[in-house]
Amino acid sequence: MHIASFRIENYKSFRATEEVPVSPGFNVIVGQNNVGKTALVEALSLRFAGHPHRSLKTAPTRLTPVPSGSSVAVQLDLGRAELFQLLRRLNNFYAPTMQPNGQSAAAEFTQAVASPTSTLVTSWQNSQVASARLASMPAGLSETRCAVLRISASDAVELAQDGLVGVSPNNRFEWQVAQLARDERVYAFNAERLRVGIAPLGTSTALRSDAANLPEVLASLKGRNPHRYERLVDHIRAVFPSVRDIGFRPREGNAVEILVWTVEPQTEREDLAVSLAESGTGIGQVLAMLYVVRRLPSGDPHRRAAELPPPGSGPKAHRNSKTAPSASVHHHDALAGRAHYG
Image 1: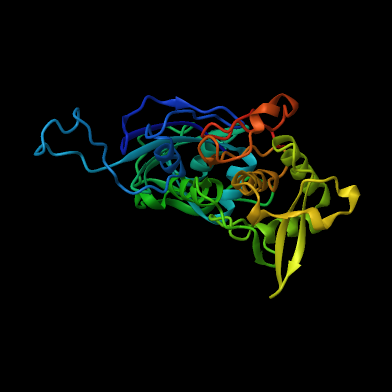
Image 2 (image 1 turned 180 degrees about the horizontal axis):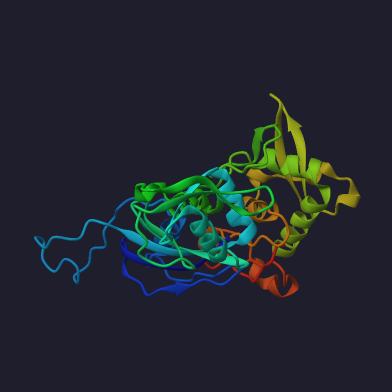
């Protein structure tokens, strides 16, 4: 899945944007302070509270009422396999239809999801789904005529229940898939120092939203999939040329600590390795973002919203960007480079 386009209305510094297309890979957002970069990340996280835009255009006088709702329209591109995976999570699901019976509705839905990629057109207000529909299905379908369908183990669309039923909008499959996609596929990292150097040892593979268990998930990845872990470290070396390896050491209380090697591992000088807590802020942030991307199977270009610290607070990796065509960081307020981590 990736965010294909977005439009923001009445949120903080955004009165109303045009529809903005988003390319696969990493996209760079560059701007001066106080122009809305953080607000953009908040909006694209789809976890935003209502915060109306206020300016002389929207509030020319103190008594001018300002519209209270903030909204974000987002188009999500989902691969067929991922869409079916999410639909299976719903077990039986409600699909709106104009067909006269359930069997015809199942055939209609099969045709609608036949393409390799499906676009889910969504709108959000104050962190809640306001509308959702599959672009390949007709607009304006009524909630009073829904077929109860399911996805079989062989990826076939099946009728789960005879007849057609009426449901509330938030029970339709599009709304529920949009909610799952937001909760499980969209990450937003705040521009602040992450306290992620030490964490309890465990076997989790899911990185917390605050990245507090980064040592746990990285150590787990190294143990169960060394090749994927080494590819992640290769990207770190490309982004931060001074970093030669990422290692771990046990700490009291069954904890594990991340170590940053700035000397070649062949020297076996673990005494020269530095704890992540004492390293530059950017290293921990990029490790977290790369882990989110690298833990995905090859060919699964999930979109992640991310923001790095302002200029001067991280390593100057941009000076070496030409040596890192597959993953580079330009420290000018945003993650840069054209990276494909499949």
